[in-house]
Length: 186
Image (cartoon, rainbow, N blue to C red; front, side):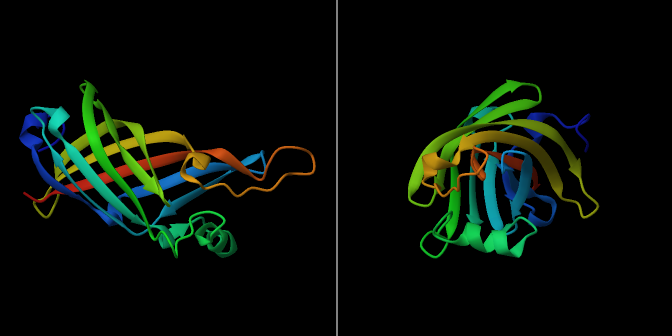
């Protein structure tokens, strides 16, 4: 089965994210002149894909805040602290879908509640369907990619430092990035 031979209806079923082939990441401006990229390395996610009626599809993802990785140990420690994620108090970041909508043959919008720290707010993420394949172990695998920009202050992630020349050290806007590979479980 490949994207060309599989209809969306044939893909209906329960799925689990494959952590070794999935990236849940982010990008934020640093010092107003460059971007810092990072990812969360520990997460789990499940979902139901209804290929015949995509509006009935559902997803739930739980991310371990302590797994943040920006390739800089000192920065990661600061991000885990009370200044940012306060992972001792709020160890998990969660997303639970509340609605799904098919925009066209390969584009979907997934709306859900994103919980960071003690704040839950709705977000809508546009996703592109990257395809489906039967992998060498006989699993049906699907891929989706999406991104959405949020204001981190909406989730009480407020810390910042003013720069001498003006501006701030960390942008308020953060782009959440999703490169998802999921395996059909039922």
